[in-house]
Amino acid sequence: MGVSGSGKSTLGARLAEALGAAFIEGDAFHDAAAVAKMRAGHPLTDADRWPWLDRLGVAIGAELHANGLAVAACSALRRCYRDRLARAIDGPTRFILLDGSADDLRERVAHRAGHYMPSSLLDSQLATLEPPLPDEAATTLDASAPPDALCHAALAWLRYDADAVRYTGEASR
Image (tube, helix red, strand yellow):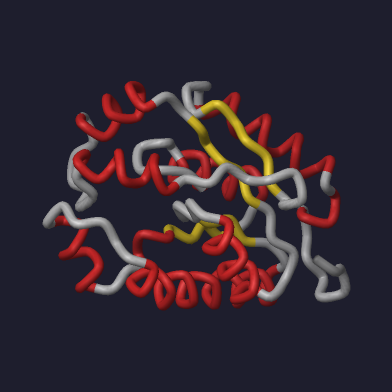
């Protein structure tokens, strides 16, 4: 999880490969109206986000229940979004926040090609971000770290939190 340009898709793909799991890109679950709104430089409202989070959560949950593990990239900026997503997943859910400086993130987003999310929306995402609280099943990693180091740190955290590694249908959240 994290704001645009934090590296969540890069980490998610590497983590999925390392775990032998499917990678689910949250951006692919936005409807056309939401993409058009963001492309035009308008931030999404909660009303725009709820159906997206539900669609994404159902897809993650289906993969989790079918294969025991799934990795997804999703902004999940607020606690209520993470809670909604976890309810839709209906299985053990862990979040990794990739946190970076506003300047580094602006630089990344400015040089990213082919993405509908304009850099003008980064400030609204940073303002919306609610870092995970101690009672959430989450950790925070430094987005400026190299992708391989982030993957190793994520794997170490997931292995420490053993019931996040493989879902059998019997573990509780």
